[in-house]
Picture 1 (cartoon, rainbow, N blue to C red):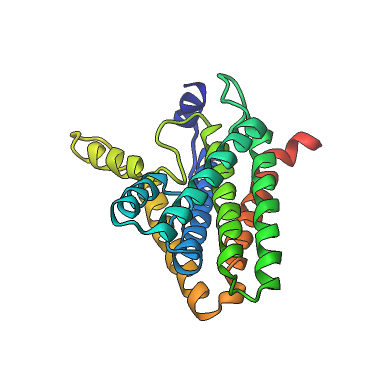
Picture 2 (picture 1 turned 90 degrees about the vertical axis):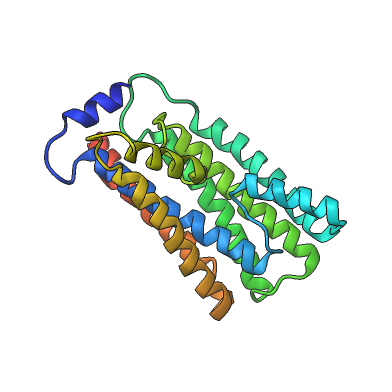
Length: 237
């Protein structure tokens, strides 16, 4: 609540809250790109959309498709473990803290380490992992997005997410039904970023598979660096 009051009192265009929102939008590019890698190269399942994976799990059980069940199960477990680890590192939102708390940066660094391990392994196998290795790589990517999801949850802002975007879309549509309510541009940009990240990730995964991890890692490095420059550089002086 306090941070929302601070946001409302800010003036100018590129305010600290908009800088925060811009970096969160960029994080959604990571989600889209990593999900695209999972869908195109790691068994055709999601690494962030656990609702979709649970549906796939049900379908695989009904049709006795063991491969889909294994892939969705691995992704689900990886995401759960990542969420637990991310929540442990990022902690929980408090009533009085800065716009981009330091623990969020630490959690994103953990995500970066996980994605870097994935990238090194991906390079070793030449972007074409065997079936057994695919499960481990899928788990790594799901773990990374679980960490990211928990990190963004630390902001404690309703509707702010980089993975639970069905809720974001629903809130956006609900807001449009209110008379004179401003358009929630942050939600619009987050949804567009997901599509853009998925498109970019899919193109690279299909056309230049060995370079697929470069997209999410590059964006994540940008976000971590941007958060440090925008919110923590001054505190070290």
